[in-house]
Amino acid sequence: MKTLLKLEELAELLVATLVFAHLPYPWWQLPALFLLPDLGMVGYLAGPRLGAFTYNLLHHKALALVVGTAGWALGQPLLLLAGTVLLFHSAFDRLLGYGLKYATGFRHTHLGMVGRTEPSVLAGPGSGYKQDN
Image 1 (cartoon, rainbow, N blue to C red):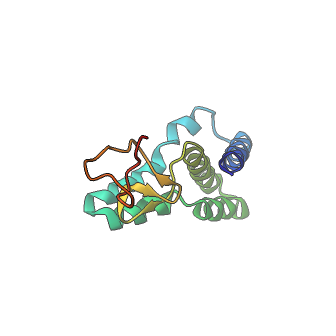
Image 2: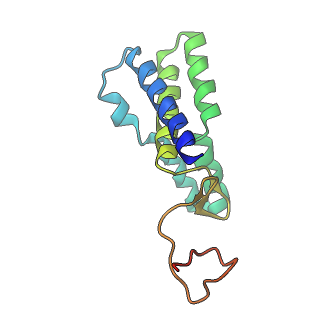
């Protein structure tokens, strides 16, 4: 199933790239704008609940589709660019295993834990830590 989901993310990444190729912007702008959705992490300065909300808002593919579709329907290339960057970034993140965040902490995502799992003396069943056997 993991492979199937990664292929789906790759397909979305390619669609975003194709849409961008038809926009009136130079190629260098896609990598230049790539990290803008990560500004949603600034919300974590006010705590994990707001941080998860702002991060998830800027990494939600429905927002990318709404903004991009509005740009297309209204003939506004800048909105279409914004939607394309949001979709490209979100698909790339998910391809790497970074998911939408839970309010319990930045590392807790809908795709599982992100980052290195620290061993603990308290590690055991139900502790949330993986055990190496």
